[in-house]
Length: 204
Length: 222
Image (cartoon, rainbow over all chains, first blue to last red; front, side, top):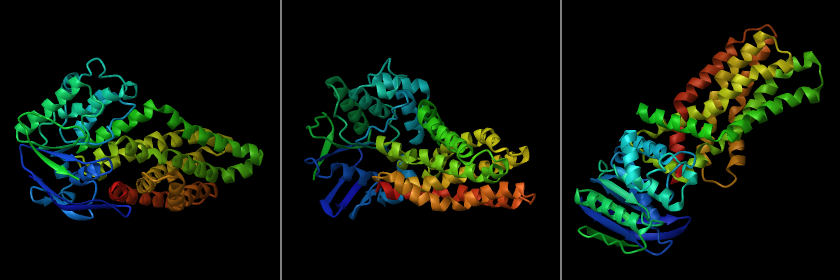
């Protein structure tokens, strides 16, 4: 259970947003919407515990997220604005590292399968610097294929730079996760229409 | 936890191998600086012998600064630093893996090449051995202290200048004891005191630096 209580965020003396409150139960999707600069990314960073809110608190299972640290890290998959890929490593190496850090070590065969599902078959061992924007995005999203151990996914603009096929694939991943009792928080400029998923919308 | 430590360590070593030019740049800088001194000062063996340790140590200090600013800056830029902070493993452990890989890619290489460079200064085999020992104990401390500065300045503009200003004063004791050990050996005195102090600094830094770096990173990314 994720709860945001009256969160206010002030950066460099400027108030970005104030009084953001909502709660997300297992099996729900939270969509954060707002114009550019409305503080969507800041809110996601607060939810991850990377950013301390100026006021209010973010709670995970009733406990303050900032104090949970590694325990929370095990239950979270965060895909931020930057893809978190190393340019000089292959998608396979990147994926294995990401899973090891998340506390869910993956066999290389499983990682190859995940990358294949993400549409990167044949590119598993190409250096990330040689991939296109969309392929990088897919490479980062491949982490979600074996991400069922994490009850909370936090995704910053996951649908950007994806083609129609990849967007459908991602929507399916999200739906499967939510229907299996997971929680997904995402920001998106477009309307996200994932049938069969109950959405909570938080407008900043 | 050990697998995560190894994973980060192996990842950073692999990255250093794939970007050899950065690693080599620090090495070439070290070789050039140490080699220029005998040319500038002149071929006076007695003079060269007395300044050898100081020159090698100052060059090692400056060379290790070169790669330091990128220790966390690269990870910060591509978003992997956030993933480290959100990992299921304690941040100090992961940071330790990064620092170990950084030392192997910079400090250890300097230690290995130092005896060859010391030939230009007509150092005896014994003095050479003490120099290598002092570097072996001292360069990890440089990496550990440097990492604190790198973590504090991550994401700032002009970070590398600020980093030098922060780290160089803190490195002075290592320089003094490191070069002092070789001088003491040359003067026929006991050098174990210097090396013990370097060892003590290393022990303190090994325990304290990862925790401090982890705290600094959390502040820097807030």
